[in-house]
Image (cartoon, rainbow, N blue to C red; front, side, top):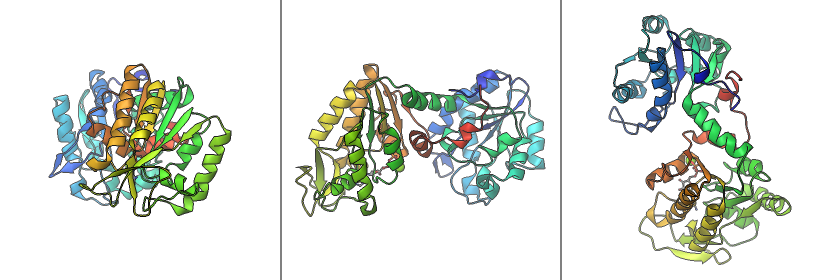
Length: 397
Ligand code: ADP
Ligand code: MG
């Protein structure tokens, strides 16, 4: 990674303003899943251990620029306090005189959580005056919020115009190392597994990965737009008619390029995609009018698993089927298992995308792959080959 990290700055006695992603799910005023908080612990603990003053800022939910206390970061601060075993002060807001007073009274190794950045509409507008107010709270800026790095907001981008020392935290570094390494310098074979409901969200990923990877394995709902473009019957399976031509051109591009674009050779279908339905297996030329495809079939599972097991680098984005329903979770699970096996055999495996991450957690395999990205949208944009504004803004080495 060509960006400076927290290891390259001396935080002792300094006010360290850290953008974290504590956008955690809440349930009755408590943190329902603290994964995102735990992911930033290495950065927070490092600042505490090195005698820095730790000032945390984040967004949570969509308060739409208003002070809506159901989106307060107080529950996250409480949970963090339990995890680091020391008090975490809760600031009344994220900017202003009162907040400045709290921050300027901090002692070394103390931690304060600022209130939700999105209580102010200026955050998402990347407003310069608001960015400057945030910048006043720190001597050093650290960005550990990979999940927000694809957005040029005040706390991810604007603030760096006023705070000249701007470096990556450990989570940010980890994300960029895994994703960057996979794309820039992959051990081969390099295989991408792409699924999810729609092709439209993944077109730029497919285009960026064509010619970079050795094979793209397609699953999920998007496969049926490809089949449609080949003139196949797809029944009531999900399709984007306005993307059929594009799907056709991607197939043609792959045919002449060096990347194999693989479509599932069979599908698991039902009359409806709901729990408890009777499912059947159809090879991809045999779908019928009343079929809705909800998953890849067993032949595709076997083929994909074999390709994945032989790979040395695997990037997976998008489930193979409607994994939320047990009847259609098998293909996604088979791919996850193959990723685990490949990882055991020395491959680097990276899972990106919110639903893919949820799927691998559901199967309790998240610790058995090399890296599960915490940033759905950000990892997608990274795989699309786009520069992330929150990363670009950090100091180069
Ligand atoms: P990610 O968040 O990992 O990038 P997406 O958001 O693109 O993934 O897609 C996830 C969704 O795709 C899941 O909710 C899943 O139910 C849905 N999906 C997968 N296969 C199908 C299918 N055959 N038909 C309809 N929806 C599907
Ligand atoms: Mg999703």
